[in-house]
Image 1 (tube, rainbow, N blue to C red):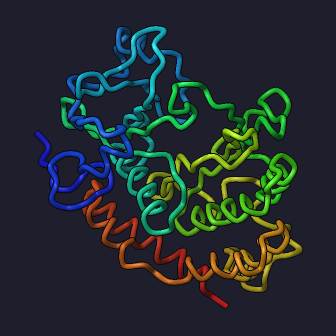
Image 2: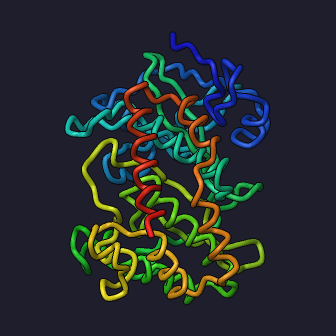
Image 3: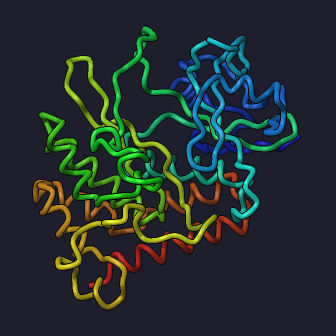
Length: 331
């Protein structure tokens, strides 16, 4: 059995299960075990039938789950899940694929704890064979269990495989994402600062899969649309060779690139300032966000050290972040 020495939710040391703080946020205060009573077998027909109609996005299968008597269990057919479990994908070409759940969990915790980004509540669970899986609490239901209206940015842009080809979710630019937010959100300046924060974070933490479906708007209780909690944050460079940005149009038009961007082929702080100005982030908010990301917070290294990555991928994760930060700070 896996030895747990930190909370598999918020990575607080000294816990062999979920900490009280994690239980409150992730499981509404219920006492829940991180150890599952079953293994994940992607080849099993019986198991596959219990996926309960959740779509498979990218390379990760998604399982629908609920909490029942202190245990996390898969939903039965027709039952509405409150959690999504993402096991390690069964794609052999991905480097360190068994550590993808730990990577996503760590990246989400850094976003939340270090940079105060509103993220989907999340943690790790462990199958009976000790394999880790990522678990996230669904945020598209209110406290009474009613579905909250939500649309991702590919839907807002009216882009589908039939209209824009199989890579439709990677088309356009982050300026296009900002324009869609401005068009659909009345209090857009507040939400634009949040969007800008997430985009800077994705660059510094090498999330090369921040495509249109990984940004969403969600209807508030007042009927307004707001940026949904961040989700699917991960340092993809550990597992695949990827680019600085997921969207084919990148950050800003090539004509607006800084001299450093033109010569090095990588953006720096100046380019993100240009981007912020072009999408309408208020100067005071822009400068505060740039300052937030310009210094390495010791908590980042602490969370990496406490994470469920192995020693090799911990070193890779730190090196990737420090390299991106160095690029960002060039002037």
